[in-house]
Image 1 (cartoon, helix red, strand yellow):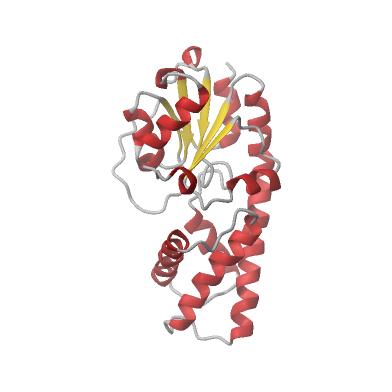
Image 2: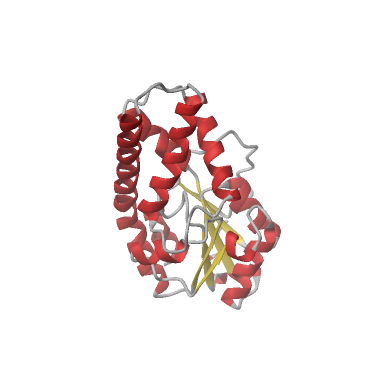
Length: 241
């Protein structure tokens, strides 16, 4: 059970939490692929999605100055190029490029709508609590926060910068230390049970699991989170009691 009376600071996840309201990014992109009528199976899409994530982790394709639309264009370009090069999707290059742009734009528009709600939640909570962001990201999270007017965090712990990735509990301890608090005085809010809730719980933080449409099946113990929500808009209702 969430003990709001003990909470003195909040750690937020970014991707899948603030930007999509608990829908995994693979599902967001798959929806946009379908809207663009890109003729691949979901298994083929998952293959290109995983490939793109690995490429972005290996190569410095995302620069610190890239905003979120830049990031989406790069990511989707890698995905669709993989599909055509491996004969999973037979289209002309001009068609591939056009579909890539449309998927990126549709996804960006989806995020801007979700962030209208998330931004208000952050604004409201930041009036009472110090906030820190802990995210597995590509090195451009500060540009994205500025782009989306989400500059409510007193510190940002980004995996590509600090050299530690979720689900390593150390990255959450960095967030706790950035708040200047003890784990038991901190609540971690994220969409991933395995990458957010479990490691944060392991170091003694309270946790709020934003439960939604995930990437794959996980072994879930719903007794672990201090609170389970399905809509980020409900956060203020619980945190400001």
